[in-house]
Every structure is written in structure tokens, then in C-alpha cells.
Image 1 (cartoon, rainbow, N blue to C red):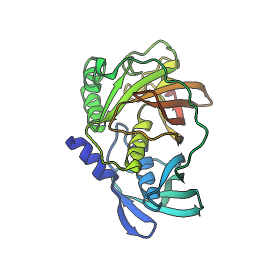
Image 2 (image 1 turned 90 degrees about the vertical axis):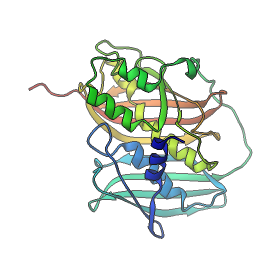
Image 3 (image 1 turned 30 degrees about the horizontal axis):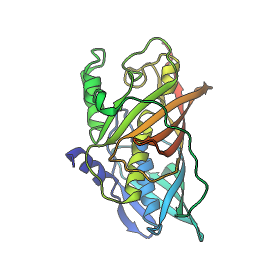
Length: 290
């Protein structure tokens, strides 16, 4: 396991204060606030620790309410909304400085047989043939050195490989609002289904709004031609998967309007199983010229 991955796992390992109350640490992201994927992942850890082990996460729905302060701890309060025969539901509120910054509802289910079909996996090149994240980032001379280093630091726990140039690599002209990324953790994980859900939740917030930027030829936060933040985030976990094995994150944007952009995505395992569906809306604004 890489040192960066161990550091991320330590970050996601919450301190239990008392029944249903947990405390998590924070760290800086590429932008000067807590990375949304970190808050969502920590909230899933908090919810999952109040659920029996035989019930696995099948969905989450979250709202980002306020920017998180990376210099302060986050307290996660878990409400036990329902403990049914098949389903368990939890609501988590993340609090900093006495105010809620994030809310999450998550549902867990015992395993059962049922109808089964899925959308086919889209074509994509083998991840082994693609440049690593570091190779891509260092190939863009227009990116400031400190921006490259911040990206590498915040993503060091994950091997994340774009199929095509990311928005910040090739911008200025609109492209198809479609982006593909292969990802896996930089090291093996324990055989805990919740841990793999948590890591996929963490990574899912890294690139989902890329397709919004592509549609308008914008490079994004890395080059400063838009400002924005996640507003809400939803995930449905269809089939078991491992976050330490290659996953294809196929993302597209059907709409942007009113200063908001919508991203939709599917995550497939390398052998073609549809593992996760993801939807996110975010604020995407063009900075005003002075």
C-alpha cells in the first residue's frame, strides 16, 4: 500500500465521540476548502458504522451546504431513520463551527435475489495503455508548477487515468460533453464492502463536472476560467466492486443553465459489470471581468 493511500485511509477513519457522533479531520484540496469527496466519504463511514455488517450501501443522496474549513475538524451526527427487515436508512449532518456544511441520506440493504439487467459498458482503451495522471499533468506547460504539485498531492492515493485530455489540458474550443477516466487506489484494500464504497464515493467527486467544462471549452478551476462548487451528489451502488481494481468512470453532461451544470456517470468494472450510477449538479460560473 502506498503511503498516500494509507494517509487517505487514516483521514477517513473517524473518531467515535459517542453513540452516533463522529469526528473527522480535514486537509486542503486543490481549491481553498475541504474537498467535497472527502466530506461525502467520511459521512458514509459515519453512516456505515451504525449499520449491521450484513447490510450493504445501495444509495446515497447528499447536499453541500457550506464550504468546509480545512483547518477545523468536522463533526458527523448520525440519525437512525429506519431499521426495517430489508432496508436500513441513515441521515448524517456534518457540522463545522456550529453550522451544518453537508447532509447525506444513505440506504443499506440485505442481499437478495431479483431481476437483473444493465446498460452495456461503453468502449474504452485498456488503462495500461494510457498515461498516468502525473505524466499527463507534467505534459501541460501552461499549468503553473504549484498547481501541478497540488493536483499530484491531492490525488496521490489514486491511480487516475484520463482517456482523453482533461478540460485543463486542452481548452478554448468546445468539445463533446463526455469524459472517461479509469481509476483504482494505489494499493490493495481490505475486503470490507463499505470501504470500497467509501473510496469510490471519494473519487467520484474529482472529475464528474469535467464534461460540463468540455461542452464550453473551459479549463476549469486549474486554470481559473470558471469558479464553482458541488451542490448535490447522488450515487446508486448496483453490484459489488473493488476500488483497488480498475473502474471505468464514464461521464457526460446533458445540461448547463442558470449558473449550474449537471453531470451524469456510470462506473463499470473492467470486466463490464455496471457497478455504480452517479449524478451531480454543481455551480459553474464564468468569472466577471473587472
